[in-house]
Image 1: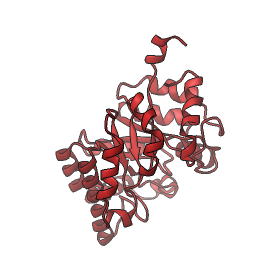
Image 2: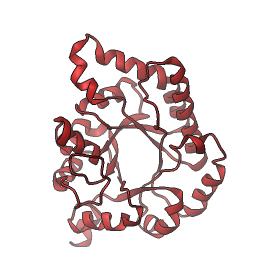
Image 3: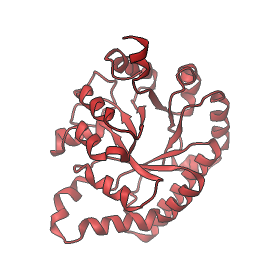
Length: 277
């Protein structure tokens, strides 16, 4: 591949915990790659003294000009909870995530979709089902989104069990805010395709369109959430990147694999296939 073709390809970034930054610092800075920090979804860290972790991130990222984000909290709750007491906890966690973003200069926070397989199969059982689901999310996040707008952080809603890829897009659009957009996890989409009758991954990209500002790149088998290195599963990567090439939103392309020691291997698969750099 010539240099001109290479530089026109999208740039890969990665997700990793702070402890891995020293390992990948040169790769991140040499390519000025986007980065997602994966420490701050843990409630015990958010409730404790996370400032030393933030300081280490600042130390490791001197010279880094790629876009920085975090994976927000998600364990043990849904942003669409019906319980008003739980809703207060969820809102607290999201605000804690924004505290971190302000501290480290992150401009994006990943949050998990509230939609389940149960929702998809039962949406026709009750008039206004989705409207009520949207209202619950707004009750949880309206104040969070208002703060995100003030501090310049975009919340990106990631598919988890989502069968219909349009629901998250409609949910994000319902906030009428530039600070709420869509994320796609390729492995989650492929699981939903293989196990619950959802469309293939490239359809998720097309459904999101220019609302898509973040993507987790991981390979899977259509049965479980594998977070494998690309090439180990059955995702059709050329179709995914063709769909991405039609967008103008410049989504962050974040390699998110279980074995962080293999990030460069995952990147090499996509670069050698001529899909990214």
